[in-house]
Length: 118
Image (cartoon, rainbow, N blue to C red; front, side, top):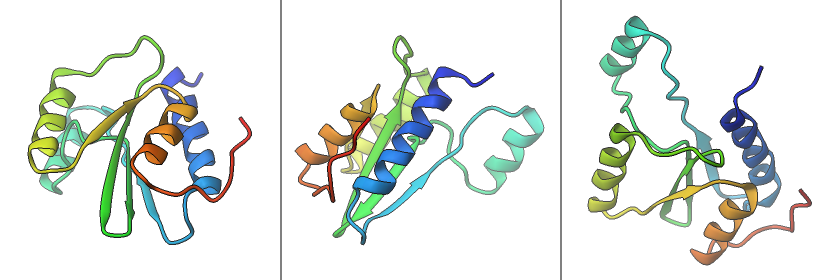
């Protein structure tokens, strides 16, 4: 059974596939806990705990988005990482729905190719 946040992540990814400008680069970061061994392996490879779920690069700018299902909250590790990122000059948005993501990106000035019908 999928977790609510997994469904949200898939919905957002589909929407971004259609909505983002063709020259935007978008990636999803998987940070799910998969045990101590996998966590240690990721750490050795430079994976950072608490990194936002979605990263978009467009026209020299970086947009970071943390997805949370309704009622979900940031973990202490996520709060700390988001603060570090923001101190480095990149804002992090926490969004709970597809419209929240698209509205955030539009407010930042990122043009959308078309309207996504949800």
